[in-house]
Amino acid sequence: MIEKQKLKPISGFPEWTPEIRMVEQAWIDRIRAIFESYGFAPIETRSVEPVEVLLKQGDTDKEIYALRRLLEEEGAGGEPDYALHYDLTVPMARYVAANLNDLTFPFKRYQIQRAWRGERPQEGRFREFTQCDIDVVDQRDIPLHFDAEMPAIVYEVMQALEVGPTVTRINNRKVLEGFYRGLGVDAAHEVIRIVDKQDKIGSAGVAKMLTDDLALDDATIAKVLELAAIRGAKADEVVGGVRALGVSGELLEQGLDELHFVMRELEAYPEGAFLADLSVARGLAYYTGTVYEVKFADEPDFPTICGGGRYENLVGSLLNKHLPGIGISIGLTRIFSKLVKDGKIAPTRKTPTEVLVCWPPGGTYEEIKAAAVALRRRGIKTEQFHEPRKMKQQMAYASNKGVPHVWFPAVGADGAHEVKNLTTGEQQAADPSVWTPD
Image (cartoon, rainbow, N blue to C red):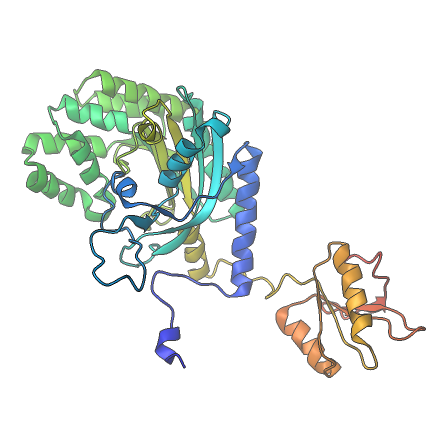
């Protein structure tokens, strides 16, 4: 017998009761419908990737769950070859590279799957979670219009799910890298990695890391922090603010032009929905252009709920080909769990069943089954009672699960079918070949 303590929840691995899980599934259905309305096709990749591939993509070595057999052969050692994927972008890149000749480009895919990260569980952070991703990959340069469409799609999803006001913070990695290069910093990618931690450690923490890790001087650090402080909804104002810092360079100008284009494309949306924020960096190494982070507008300290961006070499590096891409990921578990905790998720019934076929006194199993089959063939979600218990018990079972209708099948040659609406209490004759739930 398993000890009771072994049955307790494991931190970072959420599980829902049926009435909550059904809401989550309804969310997934809405997300899928919106993704498909924009022409994205579904894929599902394996849960395991080579460790070497995962470790190449950024500051992730401490977050990866390595894969080993529970009972390995004696003497087996060395580093593990495989690990559970920590996001869906790297698996997607490997999938595209492996199936290149069978895909139509631009390849537009969506993926709704679990991922795993070995980080310390806390509010909004889980070890096992569901992500909902969309990506576009092509064999030629991807138009900048996709950079504006990605956050617009996520905005539509957030509106459909009614999660409350959100703000999408947008930047461009070329702006960051070009600016740092203009300051004479060689380790631009290391600066980006550190700046990405600003939400967690603040400006003072970023300054300390830039000093301790990269030995940057005070004047350079001040410029880095000035850039990170620039934000605004108007494209012209943001670009002007960056140029006012007096740093120049070809890559910086290219990034500013791209950021300006994206922000202009999004200006028609409600005020506050999209914000250019030069502190957004995205720590993963594969991002090269536009980057996004979405947060709850009323709770800025809560972790990012969606993120993504443009990458030039993630897919192509696996084949030595030019295969740029752009994508964005919705942290479904992070969003959903918060709304559950805040009491903003209204539980549904405990079952998808629309009608329960009872076992009435004197009835036979064949009569009950025949009624259930007739209803089920017409697409009605139908459950049948499998033992002749007291009617009071059968009705209580239906009521406790939230089943809206109870069916009383015809008993004997002269019997008639009846159905009862448990919400209104109304009971009437019905034909299983034509009846439809309210």
